[in-house]
Structure formats: structure tokens, C-alpha cells
Image 1 (cartoon, rainbow, N blue to C red):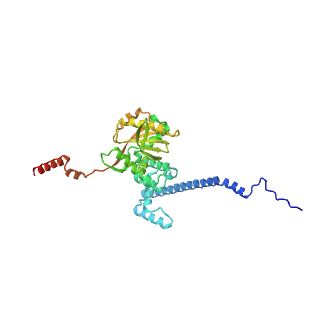
Image 2 (image 1 turned 120 degrees about the horizontal axis):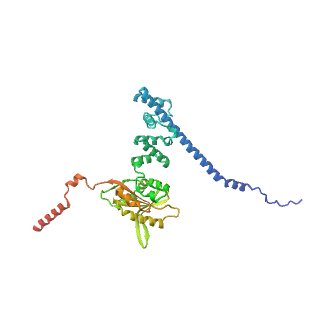
Image 3 (image 1 turned 135 degrees about the vertical axis):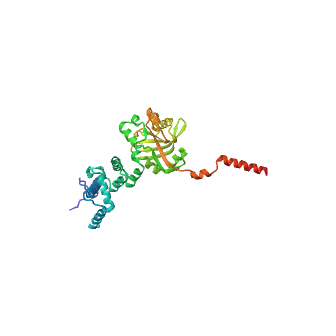
Length: 365
């Protein structure tokens, strides 16, 4: 019997390689879905653990404070409590004498609501301690708590903003945003600006000029952008705009990825002058026409002045059609010579007189 040739498999069932290909085709999105679920679960677990810890600290602080008030517990008793809690297990942490005192302060600071349901229960204990130590009012404390949650600030960043008094500076620049931007955008843009801006990383003469401020900000661009706030990126210094055959230079050009718009920053090392708004308005029109992407929002101008009169700034901006803000800035100021040394040095007139006297004496010789 003659054997026929083996027929090729032309059926619908895929071979092994094809099966692996089909499996791998759906594997990556499946893996990404699982990873997202795991990360979400881990985050929720971490938040839940933190809430439980904060709530525990509040309960301990409340109980100890009650003992202090009702039974007269003093420092020695609290010291003994800290030692006894620590001796229960070497694995128990967070119950030092100092931390128990912080727990009592925490209970006294937030006595009227359930901690686990409030924002303070969602930020780390170290953040809460810092806010308690540095901030005196509940309103301001809760403002920093909310900002920490909104921006994910580390403890060091939180300290930076508290030390720089952000609460009393953010949103304080004089602007015309309520007249030039839609309601949701106007409030967001206003909160983006500050007054004054603290450039304490710059050390300048009292009579410094615009170029010195501008160059200093560029030399310390990372610190400058941190002070500018979330979402800002540096685009250029003395950014050129070619208009009708002439070149115009913007002091500093920034872009904010959160607000999706350019920011034109003009620096004035003098008191605010209403005429400054005209130049800035000109730059905003040019940037919107030459640089702005169709998806970008209208450009905002920020005039940074050495000093300003708020009433004059408000009048200058009132009827402007472009969104502009006016704010002050502060830097470290140094004197070339100590005051006591300055008083002992001769004036230019005295030096010239002495030179003239010496010249006459030489001529006589």
C-alpha cells in the first residue's frame, strides 16, 4: 500500500507559537490593570494605616491630657508612662516622652472633631507636628494641611512654605483677573501669584537694577521656579520677539503646565509705574499671536516691582483687557561697607581737595 504525503494542517486551531502570540497579545494590558489595582490598594492601605495611627495618637493625647487636668499628672508621671510603654516591646516605636507631649498638644489643638474623618488624619504625623509647632491659628493650620494634601508636599517642602509665610502671600498680588479671565480660571490664576515674592537666595545692593535681579533668578532657576509655584517651567531669559522688523526682549518667559499658559515676567527694580502695564500688555498680545498654541490659554503678565502702591496698581489694571498681575519682591540686601567704616572714610570732595593740594605742593617743588 502506497503511503500518501502528510497533509498540511489547514484547520482553524492555531499551532503552539500562534497560541503563545495570542496569549501575549492580551498579557500586557492585563498586567498593567493588575499593577494599577495593587498600587491603588497599597495607597489606600497606607492612608488607612496613617489615619489609624493619627487617631491613636489623638486618643492617647486626649487621655493623657484628661489625666493631667483631673488627676494632676505631672512631667514625672508622663516620663514613667513613656518608659513603661517602651518596655512592653522593643518593637513599639513612637511613644517617647517628646512624642507623647506632641500627642497631648495634638489633642488640645484639635479637640472638637473626630480626627480620622478630617484632613489632618490624612497627612503624616511629622507634618502634623511641624504645623502645630509653627502655626498659631486653626484656620491657617488647616490651610497648610489642605495644601499638603493637594500638592503632596514633603515635610521639607512644607517647612519651606511655612517659613516663607505662604499663607499670607499666596493670591495677594494685585490683578485684573476677575475682569479678564472666566470665573474658574481667574481664581486659579490669582492663587498662582504671590505678594511679595521672596527671593532670599539673592543678595543684592540696595540700589540694584533690573538686570541684576533677572540674572540672579536665572542663576538660581530651580529656587526661582520653586518660589514661582507648582507647574512652572523656565522658557527663556531676554526672550526675543520679532515684530515688524524689530526685536523686543521679554525679561523672563515662563510656562505653567497646570494652567496651560505662558507667563510674561517683567522686572522693575523701582516703584511700580502705571506705564509698565502698557509694555507688558504689548508683550502679551505678541506672545498670544506668535507663541501660543491653539490649545493654550491666554498669556498672563506678571510685573515684579521693588515697591508698589496698591491703589495705583489697581487703577492701572482696571481697564486693561489682558490679564496682568503686579507684585513686589524681596531679596537680601548687603552694603558695600559697614556703616561705621563708611563714616570714617573721606568723601570724594575731600579726596579731590587733597589731590589738588598735593599737586600744588609738587608744582612748588
